[in-house]
Length: 134
Ligand code: CO
Image (cartoon, rainbow, N blue to C red; front, side):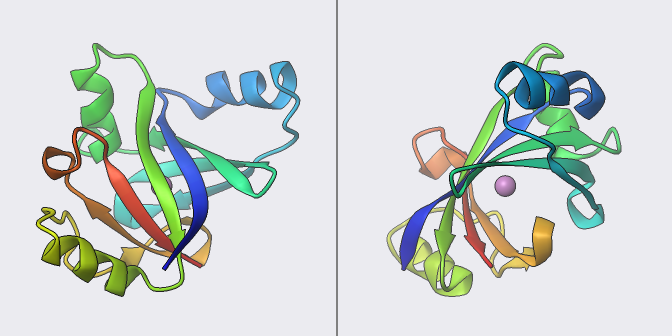
C-alpha cells in the first residue's frame, strides 16, 4: 500500500554546486549524503516535513542520471517521483498487472537502506515512478 510521497528525485550535474541552494536559499539544513553504487549516483537527501528532496549526481558517464542530464541539454531536471510503500515488490506486481512496464522486475537496494523499484515512463504518462520501501 502506498502511504505518502517519499521523495522527489532531482538530477544535478554537481551536488557541491546545488546543495547551497536547498541548504541556504531554502533553509532546509544539512543534507544526508551517501553514494549508491548500484545506481551510480551520489545522493543528497533533504528532509521537508517527512517528504524528501533527493539530489542525484552521476558518478559515471553511463549512470542513468548522466544520461537524463545529457538528454536535457546538460542541465539538471526533476527526474522522478517516489511513493513510499510498505511492500515494493507487491507494488511492482500490482502495476505490472495493470499494464505498466517495469524497469525493475523486483526491488533493488536504494539510498538509506531502502528497497526500490521503478516503472518505465513510457507507461506512466512520462513520469518516471519509483516505489520505495524503508
Ligand atoms: Co529516488
